[in-house]
Length: 236
Ligand code: CA
Image (cartoon, rainbow, N blue to C red):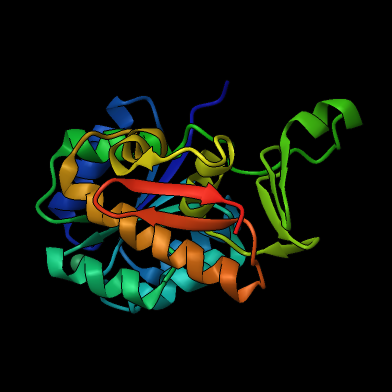
């Protein structure tokens, strides 16, 4: 299997080199650039599987760049921010990154986050698998369809545009309808981390996911919050 390709976009030399080095040591094929313009040129030349994106770049607003990346490639985006407080702001803006890390971050945590995101293939297979095999990968719950093969979610047959993280959260819930999934379980399954500082990240992504499903017209099943514990998917 080919190594996963990662594009690092960061204008601070030391951080760019640190990130490139730790990801390279973890066996990834790493490219690095220092500006938004170079980032988009690389994305168009050879789309990576994942992009580590610095929010504060000299030539482009990181949130705008993230939207541009989203429009052109299904690559995962892990955004680096200068301050922890920026993470809340960005999640609120729904810029569409799959994860956020505030500087300074632990290189080990960064590698773990990147590896967790890369567990799933970047693109859906071009050829449709046999119907029987495909059916096992599609979960139908009332108006909701979660297709793990194509990583598509449909409400009454219409595709809902979700980020990869939102899809992973919904797929985890849909695999066990009616059961309560603890936030810690979701952290382990979706982000591959036990770090409790990330619990609010689960809440923020869940709230974006819910908002999108409601906007798509989904009435049943619905994602219910079990206060202080976690979430479950239930027929309304
Ligand atoms: Ca910067």
